[in-house]
Amino acid sequence: MKYVMSFGRFWWDFVVGDDWIAAALVIAAIGGTAALAAGNIAVWWVMPVAVAVVLYVSLRRAIAA
Image (tube, rainbow, N blue to C red):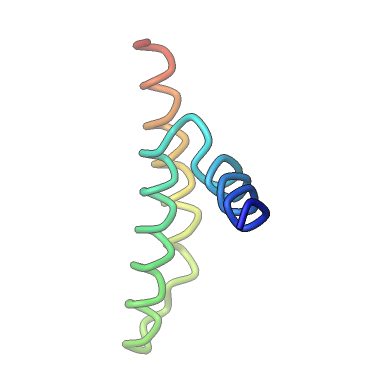
């Protein structure tokens, strides 16, 4: 059980790290892209826009802190 907990903690720290909001925005961007793609909509542009938004939000939070 100790190995399972250690494995889970590693992945939590790796994915979420210090900024849980950035991780949540990335998950929302992936989900939104998948939802739009399921509707046969050209969504190649969603992820570059999402990356720019997440970077902007993350940098604004870092500057304000």
